Image (spheres, rainbow, N blue to C red):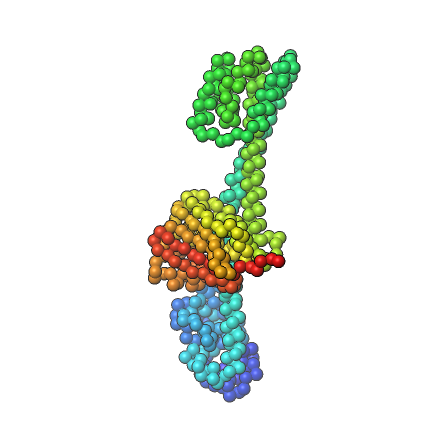
Length: 461
């Protein structure tokens, strides 16, 4: 039997009058548990409050394909609490060791509120702490889920240009050897100043020009023409050289002057060096493009996370949207066409910038998934009174009328097991409200639109 002194050692019951302690004990049930015994099961009606008296306890549950585990210890009060809206236990409680628990029925909460007002106040405080902790865990899990998705896509986006730059630098080593050997061969030739000038002029013209990428058919035709020219001058083994020159959009008639002014062996050495130099120019352009792409992505990541910036600032909504689209490019480029309709006047919102990016990421990512990666994504901004409105739409199958009232509920998801946590739109709504804004959705087959209203920042003086 539980003594009054034992209950008074529980922080929530400390200093309560004896008559209140006696009433609580008289309406409670002491439960003895063996290690592994369950005292509350996930999905069962939330009909009891538990005062942990002795032993070690653990709550465990499944959310969005993930397992949540947390411990309780003697002195904790858990389970259903007064004024809680919980209908069912969301996790399963079990004893880790032999234990004792005091079980109080939720049906007596109205009496408890009247008879034990001090305890009621303390229990409401406990419930507030529990809500804050649950919210923190949800937000952390959602951030980690979003980070996992973005990391996988960004790794792919960064790997492509990095691999291209690495491949180009590897090819440069071989080509520079060709240039060196060809230069040594030309150095052994007794060339006139005019001949040297002709070679240098031709080489410079091939390496300095910006080449517009050609289609495969045009390159093939050019390659055939250059190969025919080389064969007509006895150079039957330079087909690889012909391919390199064709990729640089070099016409066969331009090469005629080499064979007109030089003997066959000298012309061959000059042509090898010129072709190699042209390849170097192409590879350098590829390296420059690849490293620029990497730099742009790193810049987008810094913009997305607002790294090295004040956490709260006036954020340009269009810039925020474009940064998010850059980060999600790996999913968009598979078959999603983006239509932009931005108000030309800058629209500034005083906000936690990285959190707004999380809003756009969740909505756009859901739209892409709804369209199965192929369709039309519409991004629009406009002003309405003192607010900026961001409208993100897609031409996917839509959200049924029955589901629309539930899409912002925590843990609600239409995706398969393990595919969605059900926290995305709940997080979106929470962030929007934090910024004193609002969000609504309208949907029918072929036209789903999320509209976010955010108060505009005051214009700077």
